[in-house]
Image (cartoon, rainbow, N blue to C red; front, top):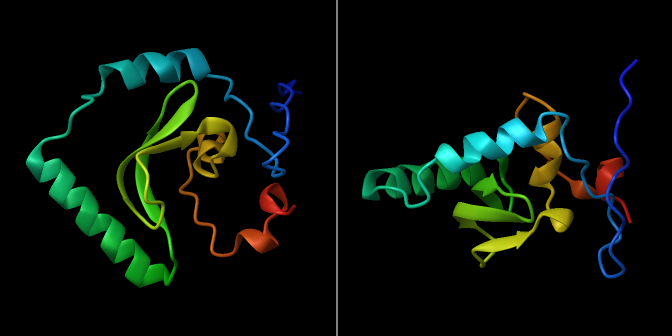
Length: 116
């Protein structure tokens, strides 16, 4: 049996369940440091196109492609968030770090992690 770490404390103004650090967090952070911080013009264009196509496919109001550092989710392409980063403790995407699967949340009101 795997002993999972405790989840981070719930912020007073953000009552959703924050994601735990994955078991491979140290290695994941080393991999993140190897990624280019600045994307090429083609990478930025292509990521915006993927975000737009995802919004159309799923009929949602927010989509992002982002990187997750120790304390923040950094948006490389986004529609609907209108900011460049958010706290990792407030990030829905932080839950993806615990799996190798794609995370699609069509309605946060129906997923226990995000129900207030």
